[in-house]
Structure formats: structure tokens, C-alpha cells
Length: 213
Image (cartoon, rainbow, N blue to C red; front, side, top):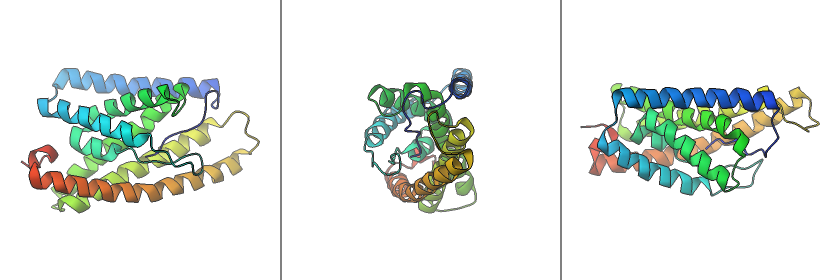
């Protein structure tokens, strides 16, 4: 849901290098965990479906305040798990950047944003289920929390990095970014409710897909 839509060259070189290194570090840790622990067969199928669905809806951009959209990363995290969810975020961002949706230089930053959404949503969902929440409120709340985390991380990355060529002082940039984050938080609620409905349906027909068996 959150995504940095700035063009190539918008971030200073140090910021591009910093966020890219963090993104590479995250992906490396995820790949290491997958190679060490393995993944279940059904997760691979879910990952493929989740990546396709996320990529498709990701391209439906609403040109408001730099662009907003849904991307189903909360749903992907809940169904595919945090590790595959992070890799799906990377794949979706790579293909999106290839189509001009997001700068190639911001792949590291955007992967951090979207992977965090999947990871937070997964652990929040498991925690809420462990507290005997019903599936719909657990999935809706978890997805909203994950997407909200991504929105705040997106805002922090922009403010910390600064924007090349911007005439706004850092304080005014922070205010502008806060507005963008607030808008994304509103979209997070909508996407959270949609995620809750999808997970509730899957739980009624294939409870094993959401870890209820």
C-alpha cells in the first residue's frame, strides 16, 4: 500500500546506497532463513498466486498526492508467511520498476517498506489468533497494522533522505510527508477490511491455508 513514487535521482547518493544496503541485508537474511529451514509446498503455490495478485492490483494507481494504491502485502504476509512475503515484495517492486512504477534506484527502500508490511501483518495475525480473536477482526487488524507500519517507514525514509531539487525546508517536507502518511493510513483501513474478508472466506473453505488446521 505504501510506496515511494519519486523518480530516479530524487534521493541523494548516500541515501540510495544506505537503503539499498539495508534492503540487500533484509533479503539476504530472508534467503538464509529459507535455505536453512525450508518452505512447505503449499506456501510456494500461495507465493505465486500472492505475487501475481499483488502485482496486478499494485499497478492500479490513484494519482493523489504522489500516488496511492493497494498492494495486498498484508494478505500476502498472512498467507505466505513473513519470509516469502518479503521476497514477494521484492519481486513485485522489481517488476513494477521495470514498468516505470517506482524508480529502480529506490528498489531497496521500497522493498523495506513493503516487506515490513507483510512481516508485521503475519506476526500480528498469529498473535491475535492466539488471543482467541475471530478470523475477520484478526486479519483486518493485522493487515491494517502492517500497512500502517509500512506507511510510517515510507515517511521516515523520505524525511531522513531528503529530496533532491526540493525547495521545501526539512520541516515543511516533514509536514508534507505526514499528510501523505495520513492518506495512506486511511487506505490501510480499507485494504485491511478487504484483507479480512478474503481471509475469512479462505478460512471457511480452506482453513489450512490460514494456519487454522
